[in-house]
Image (cartoon, rainbow, N blue to C red; front, side, top):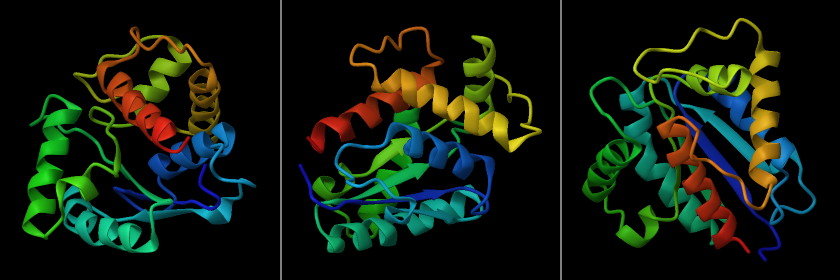
Length: 187
C-alpha cells in the first residue's frame, strides 16, 4: 500500500463545476485506503475549460503525475458528447493526443478515466430516481447539495465489495470499472 498518494483530477469547466463537486464528494465519502489520513489537500481539482482544452492539457498533467512518482494518480473527468458512443471511444481520442506528446502506453494506462455520457447530471438523475436516458442530457442540477448527496450515495455503493453495476447506465458502469481498477492497483 502506498504511503502517500495525491490524486489530481482534471475536468471540463471551472474548478467549482458540478463535475468537480461530484468527484470531490465521491472521494471524500469513499476515503481511498491508500490515502492515509484522507485529507482534501491530497486531492487537487483543475478545471480546464472546454473539452478540447482538457484533452490538450492531459499529456502535460500525466507527465507531471508520472514525474511525481507512482503514488500520484491522474483522474480525467470528461463528458462523452453526441459524436461518440462509449467511454472507450473517448479514451482512444485521449490516447491519440497522448501519443503525439510522447506518452507511452504504460504511462497512459495509469490514468483513470471517468466519462459520463453527455453530462454528469445523467448519473445524478439515475442515482436519485433509478432511471436515466443517456441519449439525452440529464436535467441541470439546481442545487450543489444534490450532486454531493448522489456522489456520496455512489461512493457508499462502490465501497460494498460485491457492488452490482449491471443496472447502471453504460457510461457509469464503464467508469466504475476504471475506478475499481485503480483501487486494485493501489492495494
